[in-house]
Every structure is written in structure tokens, then in C-alpha cells.
Image 1: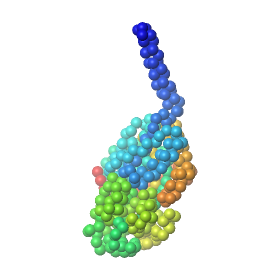
Image 2: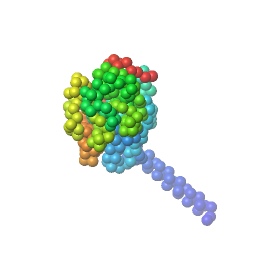
Image 3: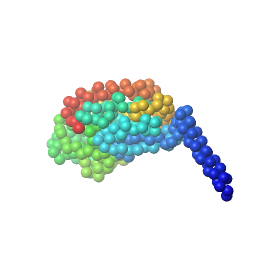
Image 4: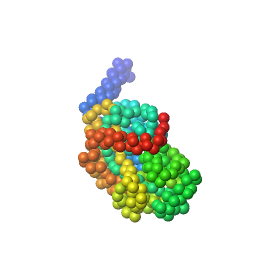
Length: 332
Ligand code: MLT
């Protein structure tokens, strides 16, 4: 082929490639978000309760955004490794974060945090509220709540409590339970209650608080012992389970709420589109059924706004700070 023809073809190919790039950049600038997969960071292990909520939402949002929503589990420090990671991630609309009460409680639990929960994020939406359950391994020698408390008090040196680390709701609930019955157990931290549940099933740990989004199948399958739920009223999917409050732990209440965040400075138009995607997912019949089956309650239309999430986080920081400081358990 003559040189000038080869050069012309090369020129055409380069021009086409540049045009494609320019079109993609223009489309992105014009709001053609998402132009590539969106990442939803989960701060605990795969297979655990936060992961279950994240993957259920991600599957639905993948349909409505017409783009894959990829769940990425970033583990460590009771959810704080992931929070710090997202706080510093590019604010280009391709990284989002789902976290629960830990976003509020970590502010009181950690002396030094690599992020500020109220200042370093954009608020997208709340998603679901989840009850917790108080469980023990299947062969634990207590057949009801009163026996559980009596047995723990009599054997506190040899009983251990599984948690997902300081900042995790399993730890918060476990701490409140220990305080309510006046014992201090050996805590065994995992990088999520997914692996903690495996240890409970394997009999390596004794007792655990965990969310119904993971525990309902185990409870129904009879693979763990259930002693109560942490909500003020009974949970529809576990009608046989009394609340801890009604069994004598007056006003005991832990409800796990999940919110979706983005790094600070993510364009408002994208935050609003993501909010819409979360809201659409929360009305998706597949999501509604799965959450219902697992005892999770989908938040209403007043609660699924960015403003409501921001206000709720602030209120939770104010609520849990004094409770946690009274517990005196801190980490650097
Ligand atoms: C998890 O997803 O593993 C749990 O939400 C951790 C926790 O107990 O907070």
C-alpha cells in the first residue's frame, strides 16, 4: 500500500478514536451517567447482613441504571477502613458507600478517625431498617432467655461473644447486652458477622447479636439458638421471638439503619440520580420481598431523601455518643 494511503487510514483511525473519546466525555459532561460500572463499597465481609442488603439493592439498581453496580467489600476496623477509603475516593460519581449505625457510633468509639462522618460525604438515601437477634451456638446449654442470663452470669470467664469489631452493630448490641446483665465477656472480633456466623455454626464462639438479614435463615433452619429480638415490638418474620425489652431488659433497643453515601463533592446531579436509583430499588417487588422475608423494613418516602439521611446521621451521633462514652470502650 502506498505510504500516503497508509497515512490517510492511520489519520482516519486516530480521528475516529478521538471522536469516540470526545463523545464519551461530552456524554458524561451532559449527564450520561453512569458511563461505566458503579462501585458500592460494603464495609464488612461478603455474605454478612450489610452485604446482603447491598447486593439486593445493587442487583435492582443495575437494572434501573442500565449499568452494573459492583459490590466491593473493604474490610477492617469495624467498618472504618471502608469509610476512610470512600471519604478519599474520587468524587466522580463512580464510588458509593453503604454503611449502618457504625457511621454514627464510630465517631464516639474511635479517638482518631481518618474521616469525618458529617463533613466528608454526600448523603444519598437511607435504605432499610433491620432488627437484631440475640443468638447462641446450637448446643449452648440454655433453652430460654432467663436460662441464658443465669448461665452466662455463672460461667462468664469461659463464654465468648462474637462481634464484627468496634464500630459494628454486633459489638454495640453485645456491649449493651453485657452492660444490661452486668457481665464482661471475652469479645472475639471478626471482619463482619458473615465469618462470625460461621464460627458460631462451627461452635468456636458462644453468643452473638446479629441482624435478621443474616440470621432469619439460620433461625428457621434450627442451626442457632434464638433468645430474643432487639426491637421494641416483635418482628413479623419471627413471631415466636420475644423482645429483650419484654424479657426484662427494660428499654433495650437496637435497630440497624442503613444509608448510602458518596465522597464529598460528588456532583449533585449524580447524587440525585443515585437517590432515584435507590428509591426505585426500594420499590422493586424483588427487593421488597427479599427484605420482607429477612425481617428488614424498607424506609418510607419521607426518609429516603439525602436531607433525611444527613439529619438522621446527626441525630444518631448525638444519641449514641453519650451511651458509648458511658461504656468506656474506645480504640485509637
Ligand atoms: C456485617 O455486615 O457483617 C455486619 O453488619 C457487621 C456488624 O455487626 O455491624
